[in-house]
Every structure is written in structure tokens, then in C-alpha cells.
Length: 200
Image 1 (tube, rainbow, N blue to C red):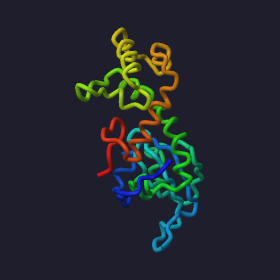
Image 2: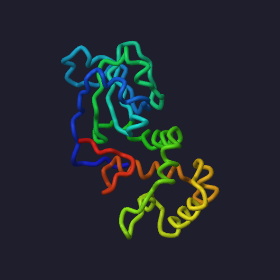
Image 3: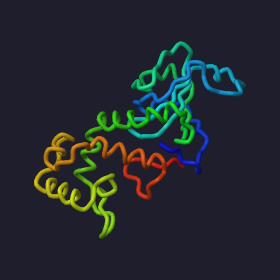
């Protein structure tokens, strides 16, 4: 996976009230001794978790109190550990380590599974963007034939879950369908954003 070269932005520091605002996250990388090169502040030596928010699909550095034992791939509820959270910085895709980038596709698939209702809602609510383009066609691999298969199945009855979607449309990997689209949006490759809110 290639990282976008242009448009990288420095992490944005959130006030303490935002410790609860990002909800549950998945850990992409973890630095038990911190990762600051300058070591100018005491916090530079504190553990740091690089995470992706399950709800917002945004990246954050979370500086934690010492003594926390966290592993890449772990799910954290930030609101539940807020007393151990010292600082939260919003970061961009370009600021992820190679290790975080490597694990990202697996974590995106996990998010799709954990947030299944969100993606089923998209399948049931997706609408035309123009007279020539439908939102569903922004998903990788959905051309005209598959679009009409989905619309015809949806016309008869809304999809209940991803298994129901597969059974009624013949599309075998909806998790990969969504995760690939999310990865494209994360890398800034797409004009239309279905799932990612661009960082300001």
C-alpha cells in the first residue's frame, strides 16, 4: 500500500474533553517508551498507541500513562481508560509507521465486521450521484451488471446483514468490497468520500 506523498498534516492536539470523543479504537502500532526523537518533554517517554477510530475511521496518537501494556490489533475503549490517557493527537495517513500501514488492511476488515449495520445501511440507502453514476458503483468491482443485481434484490427486500447480501446478490466478499473502498479513501485517491471524512 502506497502512502500519499502530498497533503500530509501534523497531528492536531485535542483538549481533554475529547478523550471520550473518539470512542472505541483499534491499535495499529505501540511504542512502550514513546517515539519522540527530541525527548524535550516528560510525556515523550510515555507509552504511545497509534490507533484508528472504529466510528470515525480517523487516525490518532494516544499518549498513555506509564505501565500500560497494549498490543497492535487490540481494541481499546478510550472512554473506559480516560484516566490513563494524557493526550490525543489527530494524525494523517502519511504519519503512520510501516508497521501500522502493514496491519491497516486487516484492521479495516475488522472494522467492517464490527460496524456491519453501518455498511448494511449504506447498501440499503445508496442512491444515484448523477444520471450516469450510482453510489454503489464507487465500490471496487461494482459495474453495471452487479449494480442492477443489488438494486433488484434490494427492491424486493432490504438487506438484513452481509450474509443476506451475499446470498441474494452472489457477491461473495462484501467485507473486502468495503475495506478496499475505505483504504482508497484513506489514501486520498477518490473524488467522492463514502465513509471517510477528510481531515481539515
